[in-house]
Amino acid sequence: MNCHTFKLLAILALTCLLFEINASHSLRPVLVGPDMAYLHTTVAFWCSAPSSSPKIIYKLIRDGRFLIGIHVGQKRDRNATFSLKVKAESAGSYQCKATARRKTGVSSSITLTVVTPPSNTRVTSEPYPPVAYEGSGITLRCDVDSGSHLYYRWFFDRNEVTPSTSGFNISGNTLTMERVTLGHDGNYYCIAWSAVQDIKRVSTSTEVKVTIKVYASKPKISFSIFKVGGGYHGNVTCWSSIGSPPGNFSLLLDDKEVASVASSESLSAWFDVAVVIGLDMGEAQCRLKTGAQDLSSESVTLEVVPVGGAVKLEVDYLYTAEAQLAAARLRCQISRGTFPRFSWLFNNSVLLSESLVDPHSQPIQSQFASDNRTQTLILTKFSPERSGYYRCRARDSFNPSGQWVQSAAVLVQITEPILNMMTEATSCTHVPQNLYTSPFETITLLFCCFLFLMLAVGLICVYKMFDYSQALPNISTANPGSAALHLSEPESLSVTPQAQMFSADRELQNQITEMTV
Image 1: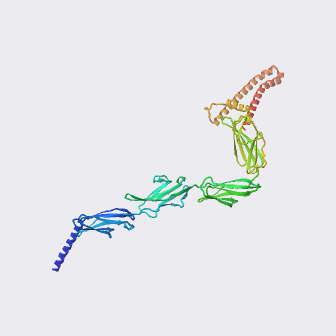
Image 2: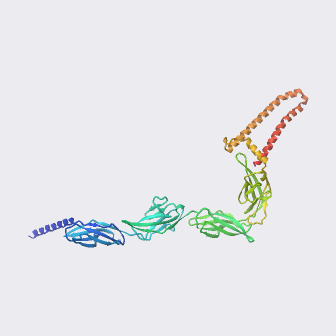
Image 3: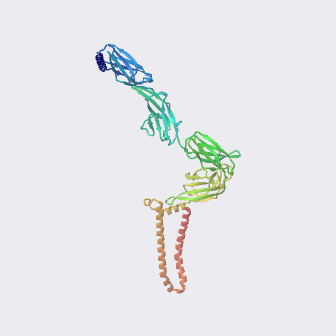
């Protein structure tokens, strides 16, 4: 009897369980709500379940175990609304559980993501401060104090940088420049933003100045002298023609640092040193230190040698490819002197400028070029009025009252006959320009003319010798006693015109050769 009762109770329990399962499948609630929400905002979830029951109980559950709210629906209000103040821990999976007449149903889940708006956006750099040399790399990062699900935009000098912009690489919140150039120098800022549905939250950083520097070139050194009262002072100048400041210059004297100065606006510096004329004060050298380099200049000797000794003036005439006189080059060279000042004289008159004026107010162009002990004067136009005696002189530039040392006068003579002679000499060998264009072809043509002339002279000489050998027996037969006398007379008569011709040619050749020295 007891066993039979136990079996009936088991069957009843199983039937109830199947009934409950069937009832739960028949109640299907629907949950509607957002999948993203900003932190500290309020969102709503709506839950509804079709049922004929006059009373439905709704429960909003997060992550399957946290009860968020309960709502009892009546006949007139069968939908449930749940308001939620979004916090950081509000993120998770939400479901709605509905119960009516012992029937229970669970909705599908909605995953809510909590979005934190960006705040306090700023640009940081590696290296810091954002200073880099050409060819090196620099990375900028857009950082925020708080924020999630962020997007970023970069701007360079108020223009947006995109992934297609050359020279930049964007990845997440970083902007990378692998090999910077001067074109990357400028102001940068970034924008961090997030979006929930159609609502955007934006935070903008302040601008950051990125400085791109140029490596400094090898420093140079120069030395000058000036008079102060009764003594002299020297000015040692150190500079680099290429490079970005700041830098620190040091003056080394015989490898010992005697002075230093910081240069913040340009890579140049000046040092004042005491000077004794004629005394060797040692080897001076400039040293430059920047944030990335340590460079040294060549050394110079701090010695002021007074101008003195012999002064030599040389004259060269320069010709074009067509053998026409183009210019005269006068080189003035002194024996010694560290800081000479040169002066030129023409017919004992000082040439005050680099442009000489002839009596017809036509400028005679000239040029000056000089180094420490040599200065060159180039006269590029000629006329007979410019012929005369040229002289150069020199003295110490730092002593206006010093004595001049000067060269001997040199005659530069360009006269009309010489100019006409040059014109005739070039016209006799003139060839149309379209036949040759190079100096080598000109020399070849002149050599051919000379060879043809020598061949003609040789043929004439052979002919004369043959004619003379034919005439000799006839003279001996006619008058043997006067053979010696008659032999000398034809020779003198035939040689004298040739000697005069060769003498004239040699004189003309000597005149032309003297002009081309």
